[in-house]
Image (cartoon, rainbow, N blue to C red; front, side):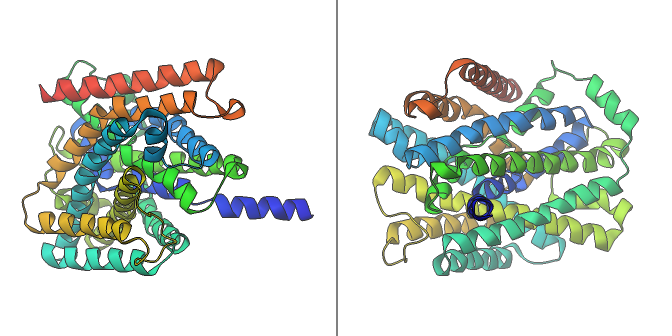
Length: 409
């Protein structure tokens, strides 16, 4: 009985970082990229959402293993084993990804506010103030609980997709007719890959596990936490694609989306204007908010690991001024840029995800090398599984880069 109690406590203490990072993975940019995929290509990109499930788990499981076994964050680990220059290169890709992602999340939130007639500046002021107060006055555990609560609103997309009554026959036809040679299709495919595997996810989960004071004893439940999250995030992505494929994709095939309003309007016939708009707003706002929390914290953690300043949510702001300052500055600057009205949401979102795909060689390259070289023997990536991981990561990276370049040029 006592052993069961200990095991239950171990699992309860572990669950969280994997769910949070996966719920953040289905962020505003990812959802819009999936919605754009359904609107333009119907169900032709649906299979990719399920193919990416195990790939996402493989990448994030290495992150879990590295964090819990070495006790170091991702940037800190690169700095320790490869040197400061390589650490700065890796963190630079992180910062670029975070900047694009923050603008994408805030643009999504601005679009949600616009559905109800709220000016962009007011939406940004409320969101930025809420997120700064939440982190400055809370602990890691309270921030994690809030993030999971907000992320659960993403399940509304599954409800919406169900109510659009997608055709199984049309799904099958879409899966069987894939235009591999079309550059526009490849560009969106690359965007979907970049929407699933992002630099900030790897940095965040590794740092979050450490801030939560977990170690190698928590490895098994942390893997399950990650696996469950990987399934959930891709089901939500698939739902976002289905809801537009079953609506815009049928009534106006090949029509690209330009605003959040268009996506919302597309799903209202099956749910009613009021219900459809509210459900869509809850799902999009939840996705964007949990992602914003993760991305801004990741930027602060990543810089802290390379520069060496204190970087824990367990510390008071007076004890870690650079950490809290970086977090807050990221939010404030992002809010100001989006409030200026200089951002096109849909183009930005797809572009950011394609950029993430182009950064995969650096991100996944470091991840694989660290798993091969830095872990002690019992935990090291080796043998047949190491070969399988190498093939999976290489194919994913190659396809993402090829698709992104083909779409651009």
